[in-house]
Length: 264
Ligand code: NAD
Image 1 (cartoon, rainbow, N blue to C red):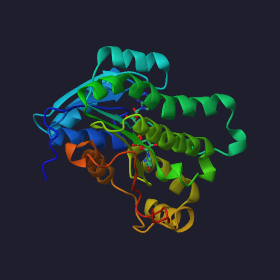
Image 2: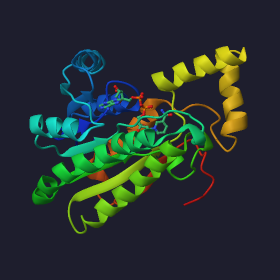
Image 3: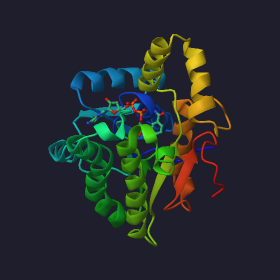
């Protein structure tokens, strides 16, 4: 299937690793011009080199900016004034007992996971509407509809993204601009692998056993009983970014391995 992304300019936030990198790679492989984002120049440069290795001839550039702040978002949109496709992928997580999450942390999660997408969407949307074509995708999580006890602040931010995405979609009625959310489940990113490595060590079990225990105890409803590969998330996101997905609008699309039991 040709996703018809050649000539489209796409910004993927937080894309120097994990799901963001997989999305950037997939969009580039489909012919889009991709802008990588991370906090450090060195990280962004290394990612551009990594992407060019994976997709020789890819049209890729990068911007180092901390999108967890208003100033960082402002710096990014000053450098990159216009895009056809915005993937609000940036998101942080940190398992912590509810009683220990102070106000500063709550606001940090809200600023990074929610306001980054709000600020960038607010900037890029008017030109998309004027052109009558654009794609905004929020990378939320199954945690947005199944709030996790081990990181309540993260769950709040992922639910908020669903509301923001649907709300922005309501402002794009009858246009060629679509706004959707994608909800991944537990995905085998570098961060998740490190986290489980540490957990396995603490529990004195193998990494394989720690993962098996996770799906038996923490995510028993998973139908696939394994971590999702970042590329599996990227495949869905690339489709949602494509002109082919024009009737998919205001939706919360799941790629969570069946963890969420509801049928709609
Ligand atoms: P990750 O931690 O692997 O990657 C995050 C990226 O964001 C990195 O490139 C990092 O450098 C960059 N980054 C971090 N803080 C930044 C900042 N302030 N400004 C700019 N860049 C910054 O993330 P991931 O696990 O791939 O998650 C990506 C998205 O998918 C997040 O929104 C997350 O909530 C969501 N998600 C992840 C999982 C999972 O299991 N990994 C599951 C569901 C949803």
